[in-house]
Length: 393
Image (tube, rainbow, N blue to C red):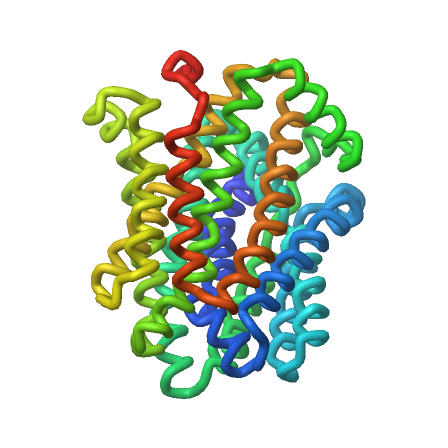
């Protein structure tokens, strides 16, 4: 009986690899700007719409998983994602892209939590739930490695066939992920998902932060560093274009960014030991992000620019697990889900708003925008009020 649930684990590995094998990931900005004919600032508006869609659809799509099963939710996720790709590639139009973003948001939220819940409940059925951390980390790593392979392939497709085809051909792995999802065995529900009310979560979280100074300071630094670093994911392709970097190699840079994240994620503890302080590691990481934005703002050397992209990704985008670990030390168990949800919401809202502003200024002058990002990041590095005593292991 338990063997059918045990088979869900390798299927989950395959599902996550295919779900993340998006050929367009390394050429998304050229897709929107060259084929789509829209400005960079409009791309950032699309991302804000996507974030809004995530908020709007999280609750109703969660009901699908609860009432009809996680397997059904994952199948529908693939179908909506495929539909979004078809919409994106149907016609170069900003309103069409808005529709694509909203459909994609439905696809993402249908899978959000359902994939993890299916794996965890399958492990419970096989009596192997104690190994869930290892299994879930492996699934996350497989998703990252999918990007490493997909992005270079997609950039070659974009160069020799067309950027639109990098989007269209992503239907192939998506379709295979749907087939894999159909083969899952639905495990019994061990624990019902708690219904979410975003206004209640945000209000409860704000009250909690008001009464917890250390948690508030950690959250401010976390949101600031992640927001400033995450903008790289969008602006790096604009920088590559300004330096006349060949389109067919964009995906290789994207793969390098993902690999840099993997390397740093697996070296954080060792690097903290080398610099002699958790606080010093965070300061150095943030300062490196700021300095690299400054270098990117004036350099005409493609090697220097790409090196800075890798540093920003490696040290800026990997602070999430660090800060979440530190924040968890100050949150009681019965408030943990609500507070962490509020943190996630705050980061999403700030990132969406900041990206719209940054995107507008990139259209005006990309290099001055990068310079401003560098200065702002360095200010946060030096002005941080988080101390070594706040960073508990």
